[in-house]
Length: 162
Length: 162
Image (cartoon, rainbow over all chains, first blue to last red; front, side, top):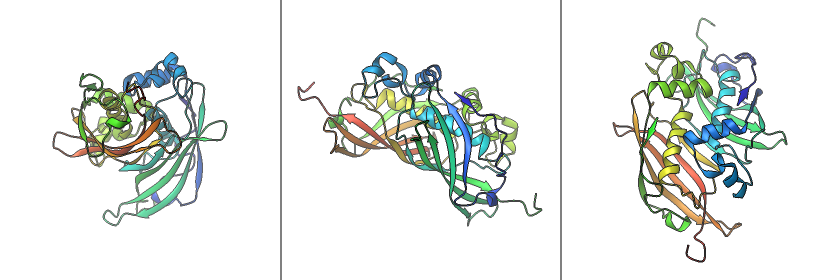
């Protein structure tokens, strides 16, 4: 796995107010090789089609594919570097509708795109907002191999205007 | 991270027909230590509260917490060992409603429980069914620290009765 080296917050996303519904960001890309696919899956998801090239070839997938958790985690890395802000990200209560519509195979690279779907101030905690984001990991054929709606808590801009 | 060493399919789950809605299985447990939390997060989710104990202490979490992707991946390991069947598991199109209701901290152990929520034969592919499972990772205080609805494709039992 490797990631683009774009600077954190290349998009100028610092606080809740910067996440505007409809805005879409190309966040970088992530590549998968056979070694990283097998290493991850041996630790976390040792199903035959993730860890054993021979068994994988005989499976319905016709070859080794990445664990969906590997794909999701690798996409997260790109989001931490180029979408979430170290200044304001307060973590996530969860995600909805995680899907892996196409398998990720050794040699594949996914472009990661983040589209702000919803942004609202918290009613109970006025220092933050809740941002929902459509996350997509798109393969070179233009097909999404990963898709999810991420929910994130993000600090509002301090009153000082900081 | 460590996992119980219970045999694969301790519960006798081999094919689609064995996953009966309402049935609930204790699948084992998974433990998190600071080193594994930091190692995972440095690779996939390098937010301060996952990788830096000092920054984490000053964060709203008051200390280091595991990346949600680490928690999910570690729970997956237990499911591969004690819920899914190597004979019949065809992978997953995705999950719904992933939530991390409580943080996972160094030293925590989660018990993993899988409850069959829904099981239906595929209309388009008669060799398989679709199983939806409520997955829970419960901490020693009895609170869920991970929850999701997993969707899995599972082969039906071969006509031979195999």
